[in-house]
Every structure is written in structure tokens, then in C-alpha cells.
Image 1 (cartoon, one colour):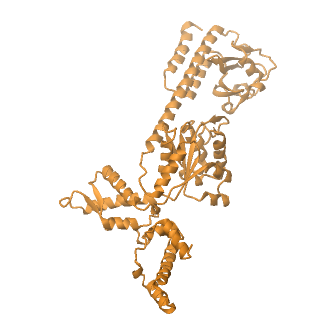
Image 2: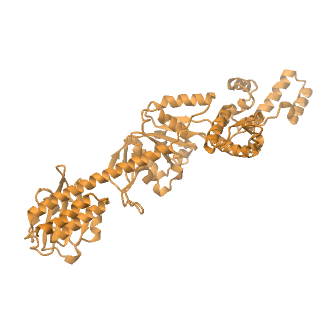
Image 3: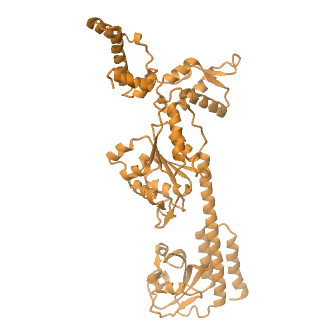
Length: 522
């Protein structure tokens, strides 16, 4: 080959170093240049992973070769190539089995006599992989210019090193972009409220946040479990990293493992490139698994393994990756019942509930409702460019008397709607502040607490008077009898919830418990 003939493929390879190519395209172009420069009927580029050589690019070999894995110990020719820093050529009639026997279409299934050689590629003084060349003519490599071949080998080493670096940089950029998206999605919010239940919740959060214990946040839908998870993360030593969020209920069952643990390219249909899972994104930080009760049983086993060992496997890979992740899980289900019914693994439940936290429903937070209304009014006014707004006293009474089955989430939506309706009715000339009245609230009447007084409970009053007159009860005995009827009715209405009943009756909880005992209702 003349100097100009040698320079042309050399320039092609060097030019490719500065081009934006996928690793697959880069390797394929390198191999095609090799085959066009040196006389051969087939060539392959294989990467060494452990004791196995994996094809990255082929030219002249059957397509199925890309799916093969060549254990070095089982292929003496490949082992011989790896053991020498110089190009290795095998005699045409060598008895050593050829790894590509039956894989070169031009050979017609017979590679008994042919020319075969290979070169090991070194990166940072460690064997990275090999390039193999096969020619059906037994003397094809007799005229091979070895110094020229060595020059190409060094250029190939530079190419694969550049491809590795570029791939790592692209992966790092992708990883950082994913983390940035996770951080952007986690909007900072305050935990609003001064009720005793919220004060106890905040104390529990500060207690567990300093540790790395796994936390299970329980509570009804809409109570703010994600806010609790964020507070735990923000007060932990991992607060510099992102709180990575996963809604387990929104994941298709066939993609749960990929979402959590990641996947390699080709692991399943549609996996066009490798992807990090949420555990990798949360490495060194906190992973929030919302609606953990929706995780399929098959995935629960793998999740348990991660919590126990800190090791994950991407879908389609047999390599273990070690991660350092603090897990906070949340559910609105009773996981103990789920375990009893066989829908949730007992061992995973115990692993998740190392430190359980219960988030109280809005109906048990008393006048925190009005504080939250102020928060939502201010936030919506600012977001929607609306004028300042206030709640009328009648509106406050109605809000405090509602049971809020949808909790804080329902309250937020209710206030947003009310603000828009009140703005439509507002007359700017009268006042610069929009007033929200009961008519602006979209509240279901069947979820209102009873506000009737004892004298309005006609049937109960008549019954008490009749019994008192017939039995000759004293005033105190009659009052006790009426209290017993009223409290029993409230307890039944609240499904036995004593704390809620005490709040409705305007009583201190401890005094209410003593009254129940005196009236023999406990």
C-alpha cells in the first residue's frame, strides 16, 4: 500500500474522533475501515468484560454473531490473541477451533483451512478487547505490513478510548439532566399549621430525619404525605442531593423494574438505549416511593433485596451496582391488612416500616384549616395574577364544619375554585379585596358536621323529658341521660372516632374521655 493509500483511511479514522457518533456507529466505521485497508473477508471488534468477549461490531460475519458471548477459556484462539501485545497470526492448518466456525457466510460452513489473525487493544495498560481478521485465502496475510497494522491498532485504541470517554460524558450529562428534572419537580412547600397534631408530626419528622432509617409515611389520600417526605429529606444529611420521586401507582406493571432499577440497551422492545433507574439517580440521596402498596408482588422481592444489600441490577444486565439510598415510602392503604390478604410481602413491610409516621387527616387539625386557606389564597392570587382575597366569617364557619374527605388536596382545589368564582362577583369600586362567601364554596352538604343544638334535637328532647318525668329523675340524672344519647349519636356518626367527636363537641380530649367513662360509654 502506498503512503497516500495508507493516509486516506488514517485520516478517516482521525476525522471520526471529532464527529458526534453513537458508540455503535463509531465502532462499525472503525471496523469497516480496517476491512477496507487490510485484505480479509470478515472482521470483528470484541470488548472484554471479565472473562467474556462481547461483539460490538462485525463486518462479513453472520448477524447472529452480535448475540454471541465468547468465553475466553472456551476459545483458545481468542485466548492466544489476548496473551500477546503483538498481532497474533495462526497457521492456516492449526488444529485450534475457530470461534467463528459457521458464522462466515462466504465460507459455506467450512473454516478448516483459512488465514486468521487478531490484535489485542490496550487502554491504560489493561486489555480492553480484540480485533479479529479472517480471510478464506490461506495466504492472504503473507504480504501484510505489520508496522502499518500496529499503527492502525494504536489508532483503534485511541478511537475506543475516545468512544468510552464520550459515552461516559454523555451518560453523566444525561444523569445530571435527570437529577435536575427531579429537583425541578420537587417544588418547595411549607408545612402549614399549629395544631397539636401537626406539632407532634413535625417533632417526629425532626427526630427521624437525622438518621438514615427507612420511613413509612401513612395517611389518607390528600393529607400531604409527599410534603412529609420532603421535610424528612430537607432536614437530613442528604439534603444537598435531590429527593427523587416515584409514583408507584402510575407505573405500568411491565415497566416498574425498569423505572426503579434502569435497563440496558435492548433489554426489551423499545429499549433503544441504556437508562438509569430511580435508585441510581437517588444514589447518595433520598428516594420517595409514593403509593408503595401498588408495587407488584414480583417487584417487591427485588425491592426487598435492594433495601437489604444496597445492590441493584439493571433489567437485561447480570452486573450488580451498589447504591447508597435512603428510602421514604408512603401509602394510603393499611399494609398490615394487605400482608394478611397476601397482597404485600410481610418481610418488605417490616423492612419499610422501620420508622412509621402517621399524617393526620385535615378534619383532626382544627383551625389549621383556616391557616391553610390563607396559604392557598396567597399562592393562587400570586400565580393567577388575581387581587387579594379574604374569607368572610360565615365562610370560615362553613369550612371549619366540613369533614374534608379529600383532605388538604381537596381544600386547595376548593379554595382555587372559590377564588375564581368570587373574582367574577367582585365589584372593584366597592373594595380592592375580593370576599369569598359560602356561595362560592363548592361543598357537599352531606359532609358537613352536625351543628344542631340540644334543643333542636326534638326527638331526643321529648324522649329525655318523657323518661325523666316517668322515672322521676333529678336534673343531673336527666342531663346525664341526654348527654349519653347525644354523645352516642355523635360517636355513631363518626364511626367511633372519639377524637373527632370530642372536637365536634368543643371538648378537650382528655375531659371527653373522662366523661365517656362517667357515662359508661367507653
